[in-house]
Image (tube, rainbow, N blue to C red):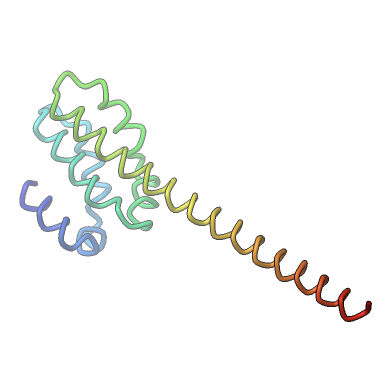
Length: 125
């Protein structure tokens, strides 16, 4: 799994095409802590693009990652926290950017409308 981690850091699309997320999600419950931690690290790599987040949501990885925050192994906890951070923060950032873009568009449209109204009032005066 270490090799996959490095490969998917460079080419996430291949990991998504290979349907790695359901396998990594299943491995989050493995008995060996090294496997759990490395599975979480794979999910860290694979949930960068939106389609990875969607597939991760469908596979049920988020509740399992949350559960791993209480794992007895520090490596597992760290990898689960990193995967959740990337999963959540990038999703929130996209949502915030979308909200900011919508607010900016409303501002521009309102400014144009006000400017047009003021211009029109000046013409009528």
